[in-house]
Length: 452
Image (cartoon, rainbow, N blue to C red; front, side, top):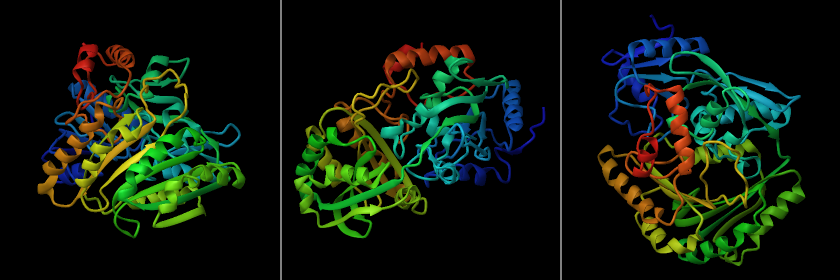
């Protein structure tokens, strides 16, 4: 059968430009699909999947392309780039929306604000919803509103044989369960997400503190002790790196961002951070700044959207106090490259939040990510080794990785509860018994045994 959308065959004149273009990272992995297709409509997706079914081709899916490892890019088979499926509908009466997988979280929130709503999309505005929602997705106000996947009400998905189905709590409920947390191990092409939205907070404020790195031990100890007091609409994070936002040298930048209902509530939340004695030693501080969601998104874009250098990263969740890994953190900081390379700590701590029954099932009190940004292609292996070994040095104390800035190909790690992974494998055998869709980039021995 003929494909009804733009198609680029390996070896063709435009193939390499398209292959490079789908990868957001400046580092382009040496992995080559046999064909790349770019559907414009749901019908195009159905046609492409049926074509792959008939040709017995394996399938990878790309939405926004923000995966730094480009886990969607595999050797052989078909890559379906659904970035053009970015239509949005909003029902202000019910506070719900639908969005295609290629929709940017920033674009969705730009439309929602006119109706007084927001969605907890990615911290960076250009993250596509497809991969973000499938892997879990923590973003602005997710401590209060929940992971992105906790706000998915239903999906429309094309199965391996090209059949289009709707999945929610009542219809194809097992597929709906799997779609909320399977990440790049999901075995279908989602063409539409049905989403629960939330009231747009009326008071969005932040405070920032820049501290010399020689205060790091006291700073981390203070945040360890204070994090249980942080209200759920407050997000406290730390960026450690060189030359941050115009501040020279190596520093620890503490951010406190609150998305609250009232200014009084916002100021009270920020005060839980301001009162920490260590912050009186800040060399620079911006306090009680009135911002909006677009400003928060643009701030993160300013860190990550830096002309597309090459990037390597890895992460871990932790429940133990961060002070227990201070020696390792100091070694990781000593190895940091130039800006915007950084070590990032997010004080997630949702205080006994009960996750819904879904594939996503692993989180911790603190999320730690280690990033290297570099421009010399020849340095890729050097930085990959530094980042992998750095996170590996604290991973034994951690509880597992998040499917976002992970590196399963180089460092397989636990990313969901074992019983959930076993259930996911059984659902995959039901819907994709011939493994037509590519699975995870790398698995621990534990998961390999559970998948058997």
